[in-house]
Image (cartoon, rainbow, N blue to C red; front, side, top):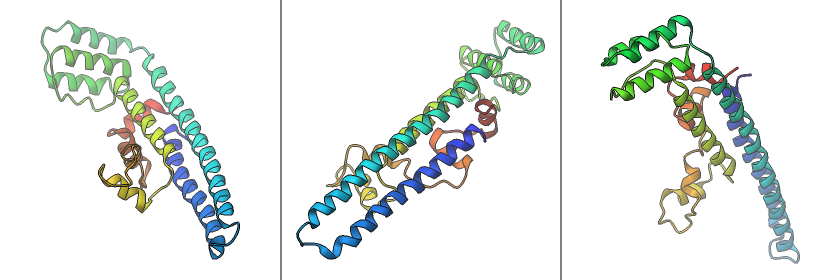
Length: 223
């Protein structure tokens, strides 16, 4: 299975696991609710919540660890592909472009189509575009710097996901709605963005990592 598919699956497994965890402990609380007010009720309730918190912490730690393994493999693949040298023809093209005093946006985009399978070449084209102060150049593929930036975003989102204590909680959603809400917590807005379901791998990568060119990103980070 590809690294990108693993990432998407981990997002889905996390949400399912988190919901199942709370359903289990909520059911235990419901069982003893009929004894509310009796001797020992509060103690038993506290014990259930203690067990919930312990299992939640273990769940969050494992989730984060699994995410970091996948993120690490993505980053490793992207950096390894960056080290693949351009072919002689690609190198000749890059050298010719670097020697030009001026170059147009159209010419760079045409060159990018030739270099679409060469991350090093795309990185050099990006440098040429910056040197010539060209904005909005569309290379049609991700250069290595862009791929690594997407991976960084996916890592940040993974940390937010792993920090979630509940999914789709109406109380938490209300607290996240405004910093002026009486139950607002400092981590609320941090986690709000990632507390949602995703329809597909492409949906998750675009939302959590800002990946627009899915095929190019897959090519860069999957073995």
